[in-house]
Image (cartoon, rainbow, N blue to C red; front, side, top):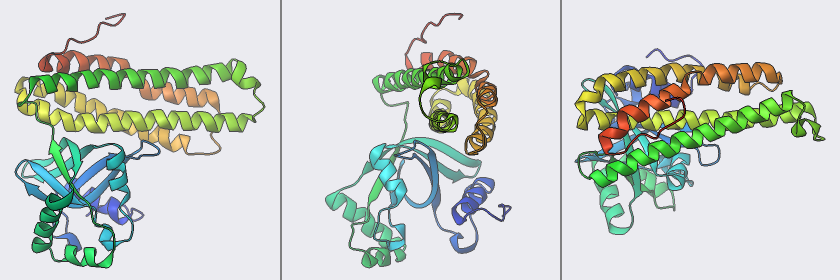
Length: 304
């Protein structure tokens, strides 16, 4: 495993999982792990966690054991707040990313599947014995574009709404920066300039997290598009590559935004502009390529 020395245990597991087709050694050798990425319920930040899973046909079950802790894991609270979960699972051809919808099981169904997991791995029985809470069982249903054309159109319409939300957030952040640099109304507020810069950093982070989460979910949805519409594979490969480039730029911007001394608004504006350069073209390419496949007409935009 080639994880960095300062990485946390989860980070090291994630690195090894992705580098070795979903296989992890050491104490997790042979353990059926998957990675799930949820949106932080307070920040919207993507949170990736390795979890044990149990496969049941096309669906995947995961368990909020938290090693028998008295509290549910944070990823469970994130799922309750937003059931869109991105799943990464190892295959012979590499790690496959899936868009899934989470459902928390209740009653007899929950008990059945938790008992099934305990029979396979007795440690889960010990986890339940350590805590008075009922350990949650969550089913993850992968996106399937072969079953329901009406559902497919909903997926396409959601893509448009997500793009519009991100466009609006970007316009808002950019306008706030321009207003302060021009000495507009916000600049006349009694707050210290450093306070205003801190507020802008938070707004920028909100946008960055939203864009990262959007790309994470899209990467999962791409697998469903490739399976149902093989002719889109070359286009999707290019879109994935664009996501990787943008993800690196977002990581660099996030580092800058986390620096409390980074109060140079012009530099912040320039870095933001660098990150989002080509974003509109990327959105337009996604809409033009993916929407017709699910029966949705791409929206007409000025300049297109």
